[in-house]
Length: 204
Image 1 (cartoon, rainbow, N blue to C red):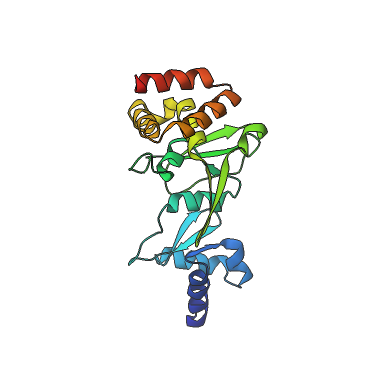
Image 2: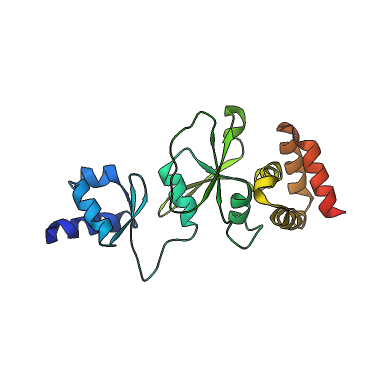
């Protein structure tokens, strides 16, 4: 690879805060062969099909990089359940699998460099209580805290009993206003009974 081509590629990544898509690289006249060469030399990481990251050995990846990368790879995906609870501070340790919500009709591939647990939603439920958080690296689409707790209860077999217990316990410490919103959402999603059972088990 010519030096000026290499420098152009690096500058392109830097101007995108480290992330670029294959289409953006090709638009800048960086060829598929040149992209592959950057990956093979360890200068660039292939995040997923058509998405790349400029390796930064000094600073590493940004906070919540898994969420950022999932939302970059699929701009319709939303962080949900236990992963969203981690984002909102209800749990301190990042989940072993990133929980992602997509529409039932969304069949786009999401092969990332970390484990993903994908949940499929109907059109009615998908957009409700979703937040879009702007970061220098891209948008994180995530459900709000009440919906995330409710979804963690719905998907308790994936979340695990110990993790769910911690999520509910931390949520109960936040007060009654959020509890009212949680139950209203649970009732709207027709899972009010199971949510109340789980809350009662923790709250005594």
